Amino acid sequence: MSEQTDTSTEIVLLDVRDSIAFITLNRPRQLNALNSAMRQRLTDALVRCNADPAVRVIVLGGAGRAFCAGNDLKETSAEASSTSQTRSEEYFTLYDTVRQLDKALIMRLHGHTAGAGLQIALLADLRIATDTAKIGMTEFNVGMPVVIGSGLLAAVVGEAVMKRLVLLGDFVSGPQAVTYNLVHEAVPEDKLDTRILELANWLASRPEAAVRLTKKGWRELLGDLIDRTWAYARATSEELNAARSGGIPARFGGPGKD
Image (cartoon, rainbow, N blue to C red; front, side):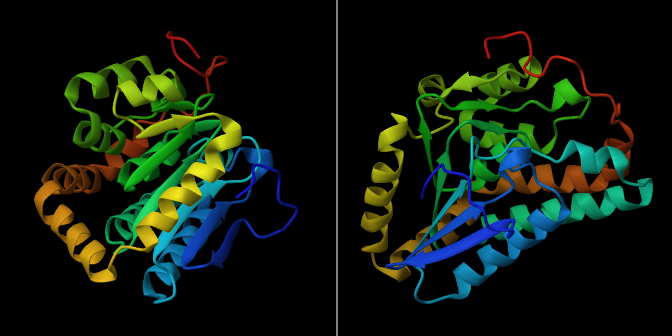
């Protein structure tokens, strides 16, 4: 995969090579912010890859300067109240699709990974970032409650780190994210694709049934906190949507270091 901007008009790209599926978010001018069309097409691409026997590993990344800056705030601010529930359900469908994958999912994180983009990454199996990446759960900075992000962070990094990331709403670098167990590795930008391909090829050589059954076991053993997060978010979705301030602060990044 390349960080160069793709000129295709497709907002989600899918390329299968040697049993590895490379999915690329492709709205580089918007830093791959997730709008409704992208959520649906990303879900479709993941479903296709999971059903394709030729695919053994999935790599998800972003075109241009970032992996994903989070939810598309422009679309969200323009939506009618009647469509906010649709947005929520699109996210639930996307996140559940990631959770139910039988195949290993590797995240390719460069530039900004924030909000909903980080939530997708937290549901994946391996997160490999550049050492210059900026990673954060930044919803507080745009007036959004942090419910799903809190549950996913708590499951991955624990309560203390979760509260620090949510309350400060700032970005941490790739190496700092490693110390938090937020990502598994941080590598120089020019080594990112080489390292991801190395990991993908190794995982593709593992027995399919072993990977599938291991991931099924993980869902059973480790999914309780996420299941409770989903249930709370669904039960309070109208209240959570109503809590949006609608205003975007001038500074995007919180009180910590950008």
